[in-house]
Length: 499
Ligand SMILES: *Cc1c(COP(=O)(O)O)cnc(C)c1O
Image 1: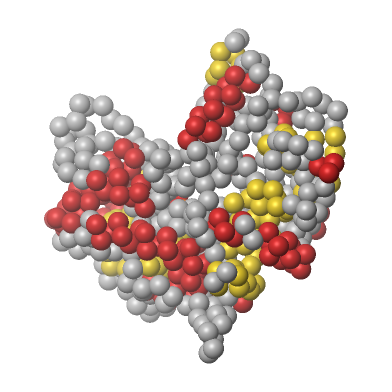
Image 2 (image 1 turned 135 degrees about the horizontal axis):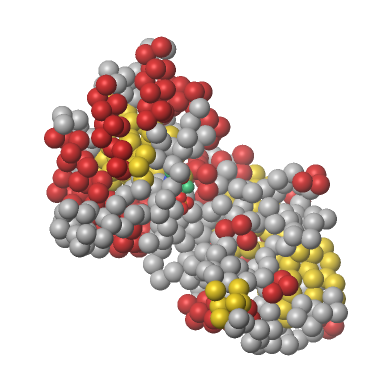
């Protein structure tokens, strides 16, 4: 057997001590079934507070809007609803997410409605006084018509822009760098027509800011977009409009792998394996986007950057500090000088360290193949913990049931994790995963830090396999309290026992 290549997860407290509470996790799965999601609502509040600390450092006002699409949980949304109203809001991208946020205690004025919207979504958003983050000129027209037709109050709107260019003509070297294309938002070059439409509909909508969301980790690209927005805000004011906020969306990221060297070693080994220089590290030699063309590695790795030196609030801090290409100062300073509010819409990073997904080991099989000697079948499928879907590679934590037995064998073992569907492609990860020993039926595998997209975004009912239940847990001295996600409320009952 090869030297084990680990990608051990980054786990902070209290997630680390939850992983240490194996008897609790076993009894939860015994009672509620496999798969099971476990959430830590207090951590989402702590994360929001970390983002707020960055605001304070830069003396900025504005709101942290949780991008609801990252997780369906009620406990997380209710916990955030209990946070300071002026500081924390929620970003909803569908009618149902809006209804859910309202039912969890968010008032309409703390809601940001994003994404493409239908008439019902627009009506309810306007009805409850949410800010409407307009995706297109067509959506602006539609909203203005609804407002007039149904006598709704004048909603606050942001204009979502995309396709920012580096500022040619502002002293740049003439090279035009277009930011990543998005099919959402209005291209920044069409902003003129959009502002004209806002003026035309001034009786129906109030422009309160500009917005973007770039699905990239590139700091420079985001810095450029932010500066462009600041410059466009000036243009708006020169025309007599009065926007006061820039909403820079989400994408602050999460570091999943604890150790930078493990990540380096694994990605290097992947290239070597693709070239045939070492045994495969993946199911049937899958290259995650890399391929061997005549002895050279081609393609690009379609993987989330597993180890990140800075992510989440730290990434926001860097973004606000990095000198802007045209105006030379950091965007934080620019926003402050112009007295603009800063809104952000973190999804993944706000639920960093907020939970884990559990699966029971159903059976362990020998394959007879040298490169993948064992298949470990789990009571979950690839939709229940959609790490592959997001290119997130990380080792699960083995939580044995009871004491080890004599025949458990010594030392690490490489296994493939397969799901509960009759589908060749149903692999929990295509990676060969190293566990400290061969698991047994009845053991649990815990996938840490799955609250951002990995828990429920891709969950489905195929083969009528059970969908994961979700529980909320909270540390109480040396023990844990838990309840079903839907039963969680951020209050304590008389006598001190929280709901
Ligand atoms: C998905 C999304 C977000 C959240 O992105 P993360 O990468 O999870 O932070 C924020 N805003 C909009 C408009 C989105 O579509």
